[in-house]
Image (cartoon, rainbow, N blue to C red; front, side, top):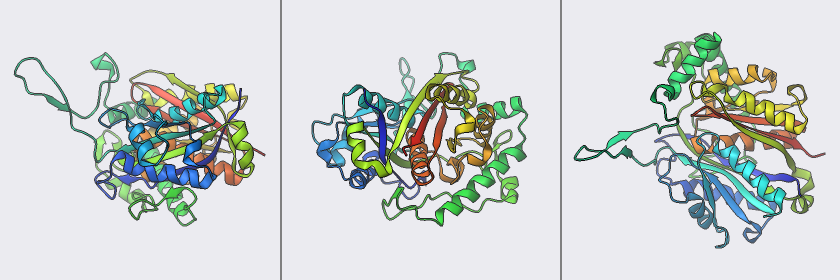
Length: 371
């Protein structure tokens, strides 16, 4: 058995849907990121054993295979596409870890890519002459009364926990402020320039006054305290001990991971149990963490996970979160992992990435910078 290590991690900028990446297909976003990974690590494409790609909104098929070919990986790399909605990007890394640890492969590229802009139009077929009925959100449970719209579920969570709109807006303002500060630093080591863009396109100077004017989506969930749908890609290079020994200066070890299901009506709480389980497997606790990357699909969900898992707020999303970037659904978990890799590589310590998904799912991954 081998440990699994990340020796390189890259992402595209995250761009709001129908914006700068609107003409790019999934493989157009993924291929440059994959190529940059290999260049960073000094590995040849022939050394890659598998590519795992999370995608939630594509047309099916096997987008991982298309991305593999577009990135110039060997023909033998079949590509494995997975869909666990928002959790998929982190789940891809957990699968990569299992492949490496078992000895199946020494080098696996894992992450996600999503084009919300180019998602296909989906429709339910009906019997007889009834025309197909288009839909946006897929079914996530067999019970219509326990399969809520995500914004409505977030508002229900806020009400259940007593979180005010002010609390949610404050988190959103802070997320944008941290992201703007990070943009002034050199993000070239993290973001691959695609179509001329090397900065997240949604980050802005969000103020309490702007939050107050933001239109309500439902209840206290507004356009300011929920993440915008977006396009983007993110991947990590997961390798065995043998390969990692060649890259000792930039290695981050995957210690553990967990994906768990919870109440479908309160999906925002699902990562709390996943964080607890992943930390326990790794022999860690919230107090031993130096960094946490927690998904901000909604501000209320991020606050609930931070507080529910007992993680110090000061270490959460140091360069801002999805509220300041956007939410490329199948890639969002991988974006968290890329961010966490660079934080740990630069500053050391142990960190966790965590994300919620529709249907009441939560995934968490614990990583540590090797000494």
